[in-house]
Image (cartoon, rainbow, N blue to C red; front, side, top):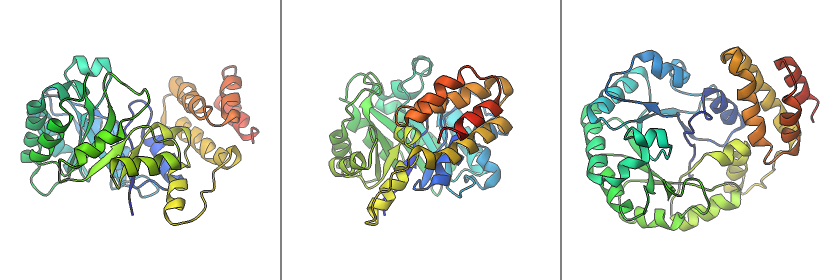
Amino acid sequence: MSRIILAPMEGLADDILRDCLTRIGGIDLCVTEFIRVTTQLLPPKVFKRLCPELANGCKTPAGIPVRIQLLGSDPAALAANAVRALELGSPGIDLNFGCPAKTVNRSQGGAILLQEPQRVAHIVATVRQAIGDDAWLSAKMRLGFATKDLAIENAKGIEGAGANELTVHARTKVEGYRPPAHWQWIEKIRRQVSIPVIANGEVWTPEDYTTCQQVSGCDDVMIGRGLVWKPDLALQICHLQIGHPAQEWDWSALVPTVLYFIDLVAAQVEVRFQHARIKQWLKLLGRIYPQADACFEQGKRLKTLNELRSLVTHSR
């Protein structure tokens, strides 16, 4: 059975959303938002803040494993922090070579490193040496920075440096998140490496998932925004995989999850950020569910979480 992996999405796919989405079902693995590494060994509290699941065997309350992702360009610092993440309980390490954010790239992190395949390979090799042969090490990359010319060289360098697995977001940094995703390039990469390759990019429906698998040749698919906008997407895909009809959730079916999300935000997020965190997801859900968009618009005028909770409750 192929796996569905929840993508790391900075400022969005935090432990609260991971909890909500994995409770619905269909997700086999989560990767955290990146932990930014500069030149220092980070204190445990940083890992625990971005991955509270460390206190639960590095699993969500639904029992889905969570892998810590690191981002940076200093090989020694990344290696030291990878060791610490494993010591704290992460079941593996993921290295970020795909983030397109300008602030990240300006500090020599994320996708900008793909312009220097030897540097990427050196980072992976340094981390592998530090964590040992038995620890799980994966990497996530885009097809390149401005062009795709170095895609295969980067992938082969990552493999040769000791990674167990590679996720490929099928766009360059310059292409950002604009469609299409070039799944055929993932297939080119997959043919050049022997480690498992995970496809990522532009999967919004079960049909997209199937097409992505067919074009890329990958068994496993990582999904990001598609799961945020349509939280039952992984469950639909799983139903299709076992030959059952994909019963799509309507808004009424999703409301209990949204209410649970509001409760978690109320308990775990600073008061001054609570409304923004809730409205963020309602706005994104509104791309699929008109009721969520209505809640977002009406919620702008509300002052308390109880009012927002009541609004969502009565939107069914």
